[in-house]
Amino acid sequence: MSSWFTSSSSEPSLPSLSFPLYVHAPTTTSSSLPPCPTSLSSLNSPCTIDMTPYIPSLPFTIPPPVLLTFLFTLVVISFEYYLDYRQRSKFRDATEPTQLFEIVEEVERSQKEGDKKPLVDRMKEQFKKSSAYGLDKVNFSMIQKIFSLAETAAYLLLGLFPYFWTLSVDLGSKYAGWEEGQDDIKISCIFFIINTFIGELTSLPLSMYSQFVIEEAHGFNKQTLSLFFTDKLKSQALTYAIGSPFLALLLKVIQTMGERFYVYVWGIVLFFSIFMLTVYPEFIMPMFNKFTPLEPSPLKTKIEELASKINYPLTKLFVIDGSKRSSHSNAFMFGFGSNKRIVLFDTLLKQVNEGELLSILGHELGHWALYHTAINFAVTQLYFGAAFYTFGEFQRYPHVYSAFGFQVDSVPLVVALFLFFQTVWAPVDKVISFLLTMNSRACEYQADKYSIVKLRQTGLKSGLTKIHLENLGAMKVDWMYSMYHHSHPTLGERLKRMGEEEAKLV
Image (cartoon, rainbow, N blue to C red; front, side, top):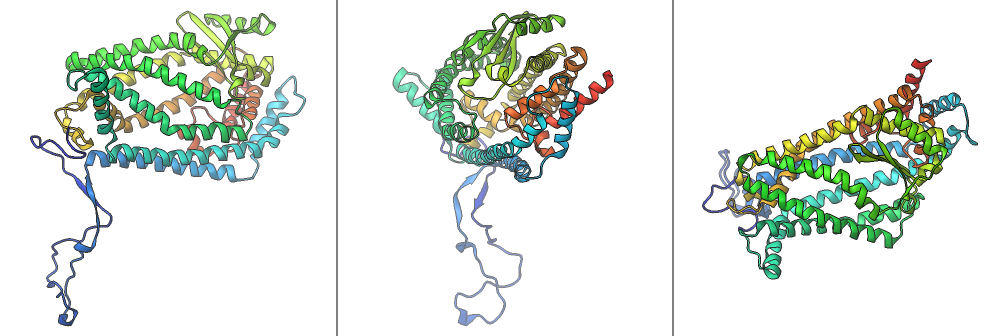
């Protein structure tokens, strides 16, 4: 195996860019002035001083593929850092969001039954808490970005990919008798486990700080250290147990199916996606949370009636014990084909009334009725198909891998896959992610409208406002930050749009 950043002598190498600490002075100059004498006493006229010996430089070079990958990461993180800065200024601004308060007051006037305390008064009380929570999160996000940049630099500049591959080869050889070249797929599974474990290990301090400092400080954390680490161990074990065989199958298909391997890979990814849609909620989620069937009650009857109204094939209703980890609330639907289930967080049942809960479920049912779920699934499959097709084209340029510390003619397939998604596909992924975020925001408006217009639910506005309050959602949001990061429109935007839809029904 070649040393870091060197290429095979039998293959043409890529040009490299030297990265000095300062800019090198030229060794030759177009000036007609003579060089300066070594002794100042001999200096009688203008001359040129050669500063090259005095300018230090780094003892290594950075090939263009590595440089471009790092620069792209730097640009993305810098842009996101700028967005965080914009949003942080919103959280630091103590001026109340009067426009949002006015919209909420209008919501309350339209409700037939009021709560003990007006929503707008609760919002005014929660404004400072919401801003403090948001400020802590955005500051933490900025720290995470610096860590991410440092981690990327370490992988690229210190040659961690070649090192982890060599370590995987050594472990496979020592404990299983595997040989590089003959047992690469098996060794690739070790490589996958090492990378996953290192990633989890390096992110652990940040995860603990987020959970036990930020979430704890704002009253959301209900998790114990024991439960936290138990969840981590379960997640890692499942990742290795499911991810390793899937990766091995993927690599085998890429190796044996020729230039059109991406067609077969797409089929495998499609099957795996359907498999996980079925298995994950049925067997994996119960390993982390307790699912209790919703007991017979007027609420259960009304939910079943709402589902049957649009022929949603509801088979089971569950309540999940989300409160044992967090006081955040949620509701979701899952299932494949005619076997659908609805899951309600126990925290949600305490935060909204019956009419509001039905309206929120009407919104979720709207996603299904408007084929948002099916379209997202199809787009995901197209995404993977395009990614693996592009990977096949990328394989035509093996010299790129020499920039990352590998011999051109012996790049491990799993490493090629990792590097592809980290380099060539990274800009494409960012663009697609942004487009999907924009589409998701449009889908949220459509689902809101479906609940109000099609299902004639009247509690969606107050229900979403209560959830926003209970979760200390941001009340002042920078438009650019929201457009880039948020898959849902802001609360004010949604309430305003829903008010317009309700006005059309009058």
